[in-house]
Amino acid sequence: MARKKRVGGGAPEWLVTFADLMSLLVCFFVLIISFSIQDKEKLQVVAGSMREAFGVKDTARKTGIIEVEGIPIRDYMKDISQIEQEKDSDFAQERHEMRRKQGPEANTHNTMEADIEKPRQFATAAASLRQAWQEMPEITEISNNIILEETDEGLNIMLVDQDGRSMFREGSKYPYETTRRLIAKMAPVLARMPNRIEITGHTTTGRLTSTPSYTGWDLSSERANVARQILAEYGVPEDQFYAVVGKSDTEPLFPNDPYLAANRRIGILLKAEEPPIPPGHKL
Image (cartoon, rainbow, N blue to C red; front, side, top):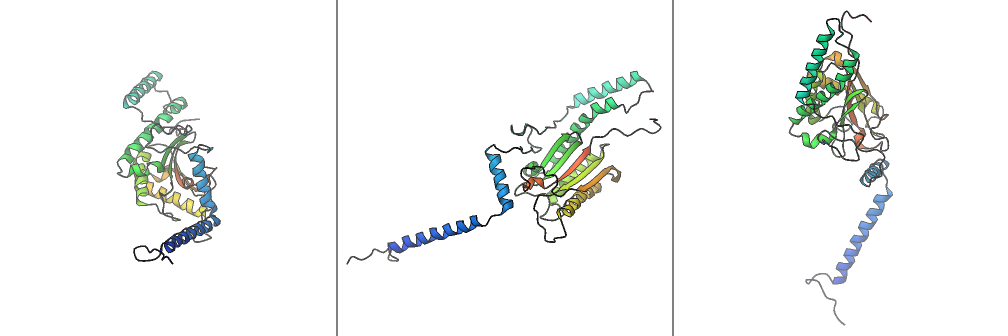
């Protein structure tokens, strides 16, 4: 009877093959068990990522501050470009000449003039914010967490979470140090603006906390208030704040993917309002 060959004087060849087969079966059963336990939140995130990757997603992702031109599919995101200094000087000179011709009876808070000046103010503010943030060495890493958007309500500055990079600690109202310095850099720019500020906090759908009584409403409102405290600490006057609101998961940034990390965010809105009535002016 022929003897079975041994591998290196050890176990026979059939035993090595059998061991490999058992290893494959174990892996197979582990995969079956893994797929049988479904996490709805994770599946929703994966589904959203797949739809976006294959171009069948209805809502496009918004661009970060470093992307100047943006990605072609992000056509609804407005890019706030920097205003050249020469144009600002020309505009100021023309405005001065107009006031001189109108005489002392002219109202310096003319509504038409305000409508022209608002978008320029927001563009200048956006450019100043970018310049302030560029001083941070880690700005490239967190650029996708920052969104600047000019809307009918004003200049909206959003600090959003991304997969693998959050702006606040897990389930906590306290931001990471990078987030804190990011907000602090905004304060001098916002303090120079005459517009009031509204801060909103947002969470994702289905977010669980260790304490059942502590809900997304509590977390979102406390994060918004911490952002207000940081801005106030670094120079924004208290009377410039219009509102601090927690909205929980009621207004997702991506309604088609309520579990998406980017729905967790802080919104700092520089409100577009009519200029205040000067003292002594009669309606």
